Structures are given as C-alpha cells and as structure tokens.
Length: 120
Image (cartoon, rainbow, N blue to C red; front, side):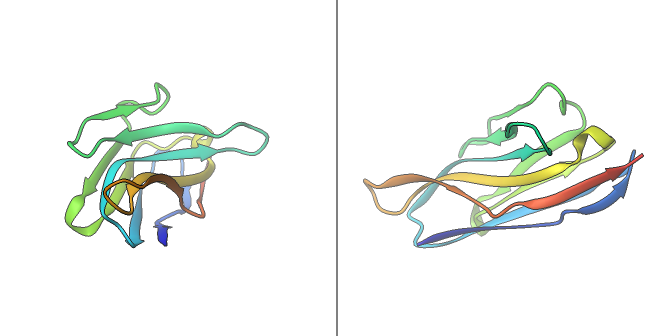
C-alpha cells in the first residue's frame, strides 16, 4: 500500500509565500513523475507543476516564474515552493505520483489535499 501525505498549506496574504511538501511512503519500488494539481471551488482540477524522475519540470502558465517544484528522491518527497501568491491561487492542492510497487506494477496515487488560502 502506498500513501502520499501533504503538508504546508495555510492562510497567507497576497504576495506571500508557502512551501508545500508531499511524502510518499509504503511499498515503493520506484517513483516516476511527481506533481501538484489544484482545485478551486467550482472549478476543475488543474495541473500546477510536474517533475520527472530525472528532474525535468513543467508548469502551468499561470504559475510560471512564481512556483518551483523540486523533489528529494532519497526522501520520496516532492515540494512546491510558491512565491508571489495571488488570491487566484486559492485552492486545495493535491500531490500525485506515478509509483511502481514492483518491477511490473505501476499506478497513479494521490494525496488527500492541503488547503491554500490567499487573502487580498
């Protein structure tokens, strides 16, 4: 069984910063891509940032230049550094990862979500 546990959400004023963390644990053979998505009230979930196992990254246009995704493979952890936050960044942020539990079994896993609220 695999678990993803997020932390680091909260309330911040516009222009402020937050750092989200997501640690994967359980029966892990290897972790491929990891990423962050978000869902604002009344909106569809959208991909925010993604990082491959070799460190290649991509970002949603709305967060480019403000957010940075990184990972610590030794800790099975992915981070999202969020700077210059805007009220439009308010959402529940979800971590996800493509994890192999054996050499031939791979699945997509999601965390429970962490709330980010940016006040104006």
